[in-house]
Length: 316
Image (cartoon, rainbow, N blue to C red; front, side, top):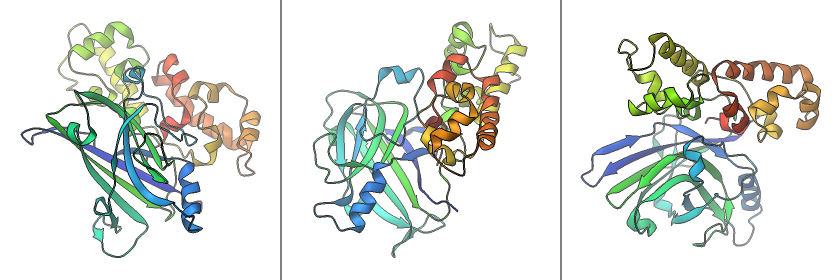
């Protein structure tokens, strides 16, 4: 069985009085390819190379507020890193299989840090949209070192009166599979991503506080929204449930992670199988993958299918 390094993260924001403002729940965390280079260097005891050294944050791209892209395994830097926190040993602990802290080494790590404007040296609010861990020969300078993981997330407007507690779990092997489905990413897609919503209904939903697919699934279906026919609202909710319920084992297709869902659905299976350069990925297996992805065509707008790549479907 193929093993991998997988992970998950959770963000919790509080105001100056300690009141919880937002909790992301556990979300996907992509371990990038350069992490394996770092592991090899650590095994060789390469001079000047260390493990987790910094937690970097960035503002990403404002265009991500409409539709977030998925990070890809080949990424080595944040899009727009603006600050990083040093990770001392007290921020990193071993976890056992019950998520309890272990005094002896295990194959699982928890990294936890609190981010605020003072610690990051911000002058005024900053719209955070991305983060990553860096090791190797990483230093204070942005972009230095070897990137371990990469996350693109909904905008967090971190201001002086807010604190962000970020917890990250990494599991090394143990039979875990990379990319077994999509849930956290889909739940945060904007409602306009649903086929048929469009600008008109999107404005109505946003005005009612319904901004994401998760918001759409949380509303009371017995309480109609003004200017949206009940039959349309049920249709939108049904499509949102299809997307957030999507599951597929995508790990054999890592060579295709940068391809959009639209491109994957339209490309010949023989061509995709050859591109993976894997003897276990046959055209027949590609067809099954395409059939699994095709269900997203039922629910998502065509423009969204062209923007989301396979990496965007990965969850920890």
